Image 1: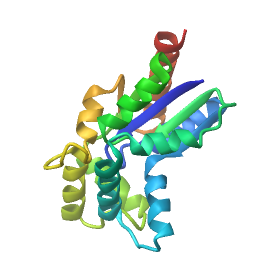
Image 2: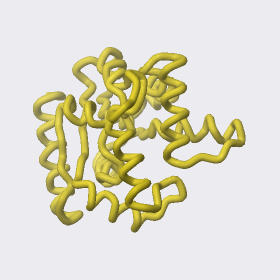
Image 3: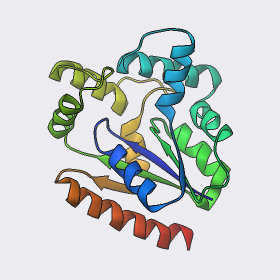
Length: 192
């Protein structure tokens, strides 16, 4: 079983990577934010991106920076050839996966220019997404790690420390070609 951790700036294209992998491999997928959402829904709390960030930070502060990946792995299906853990925002999460899976784990980052990511957020129009450029900048700055405690959001650091970084600044077809190139190299370099 091989494990891919996905990290990246919001609206950078992680979902496109996940969809591509789902078409190509017998995989199991979990998003760390889905764990946070489930916690908040149990408490019957409403949420947006900021409250998701806050709750994720609270969980990491209380239980350790690895807690979300630990919870995700407890539910993984062991009969799959590939596990994708999406939404890694703190290197403690990636480090824990590396410790658990060794050479079978790789961290893949996706990034795109800010203005393009904001356009995508406006187009997808999810209820939890920021609605204005100012809100987007505030949430993005925090997500990247600006002013965050050690247990907080540090996507920028995760991107810098990733095994592979894919820049999504062109068409969907160009991006999928980049994903294919990375995945083919990933299997050659990390798995064979």
